[in-house]
Image (cartoon, rainbow, N blue to C red):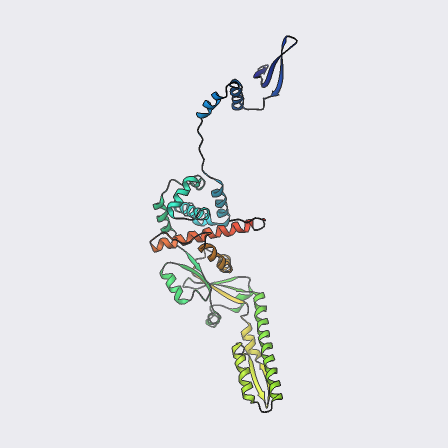
Length: 384
């Protein structure tokens, strides 16, 4: 068996796997396979195998001259990089060396949680530099990069970020997004800084001369929920009032003042005393509603106002509103960030500003993990 090379008028080269045999004392040839579709290296390999078919040990000596090595892992880095790009994390961090180092810290946190040194070692086995366009770096570069990640905006509800906390955040160089209370909204209305017509828009914004931004929205569904809650509270009060009236009717010696005190206390506990008035005639109690007080109360139903010092060029009102709404995911975020999935602890740094950078890395990594979880949620798989 051999490989034969033929030419057709010098324009076409054909490689044939052929066999020679004898028939009736004559030497004949037959074609076993047409190898013209193989490249030159494959043809050479087959010729080598046929040449040493009688002594395969020679092929072993040839194979010993070939060295094999594991290349850099690409898949994980590329996948997480693409998700980070789609989420806007790549653009947010920027394309400077500092931005790319920060991005690698985020990607490394998703792949394998550990210290800055472990992130450097991870880059040695993954194609981090090739995919991100980075030059060689060490753990000192990553520690310094945590200092670069110092500008952070904290988002919290109105119970977490109040005036005192805002002063502390500002002093530490943080920005903030929070909501204000109903009395604060009423104060802005009284001062003429805002008007009720702003709540008629899908999303409105007012900026003050101090650089603060107020973003307004009325949630119609929430407004209905609040009004239904008031109706339920009034119904609860009426049931108690009927029970006390029945008791007074059935017990002539019972004191009406005691029953009135019980109903009044419930009215105050339900926080409807500002528009519901309890009155008693002889041994029967009733109530009336203050329409003006109720209308004044209902005007802000479903209304909320966000307050932030983030510049408009950094985030528009839609982005500010979306980030505040993301607080609904905060419980799952904390659990994911603190446990084995991302392991915020141990921190492995000493300086406060680097701790801040480390926490931001974990938070960005969490954002990618959350996106991944959404991608595979429709699959019938358990993913670690």
